[in-house]
Length: 324
Image 1 (cartoon, rainbow, N blue to C red):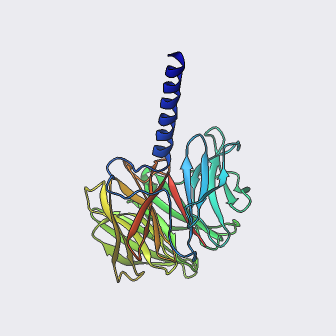
Image 2: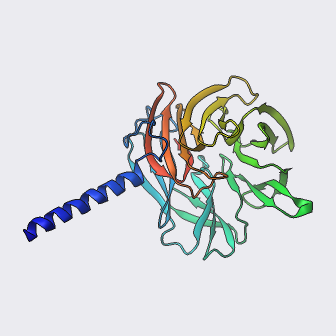
Image 3: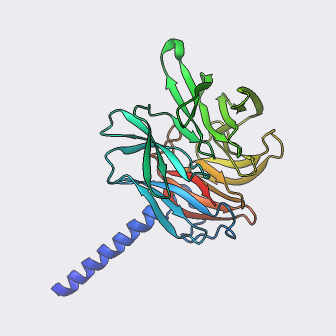
């Protein structure tokens, strides 16, 4: 009888552990049960964009790569680092690196570049603020970040542009309304960002050579996310005012023409939406209470836009982009 009880208890422990692992890695967040789920991934034919990079957050912040067959590989962890990751940029595909704001014991922060080929860090700035967002150009030469000030005569959001080698820094824009995560075109010469006022979002382009900015087009929607595909189409996560758990991800030309809905989502807000050259869209849906927060766990989905096949592949806190 005693042996039988022990066997039952062991069985329950194994079942419970398996359920925890599946929920942690594969199960969709509440409210998105209509999304298809599959831990196996087939996102194309091995063209550029077949490898997805994403971030998980637990006892440590970890960067993972998933290939077109759904196989994963851990590229970086801060588990043994004295300075822990507080903010990550997107991926710079040409240099295969990301920027990170790291700090020790929540004290002052530094800015580092992490090479994902060898997981080595290079300190760029010993002192650096923890910005609202951080974005690196495709060629790895430039980066942007946004800071917020509540000082009366400087109130608002400021978007800064800086050369990674530290030789140049400038203020791109200042706004009383939030500046939405900027995306870079493939040439690393133009930054696109958004400013939302009421129910209207302006999409603005800034050329880093001419130092001129102009409103490209406006959307009568709230835009939570902006990125650019390899074809320099803008990818927008949009929702109507008051809609905090439903919306759609669209692609649109940089001149505001040829709007195309890629996918509709529910169960939360969508962010970190990146479209690869082989037309695979990766995005993350999470229950963000207010602004997009890179510590909020959600479900990562991949959509093959050529056949509308959609899969829920992993849970994570951020998508960094595609690697060819």
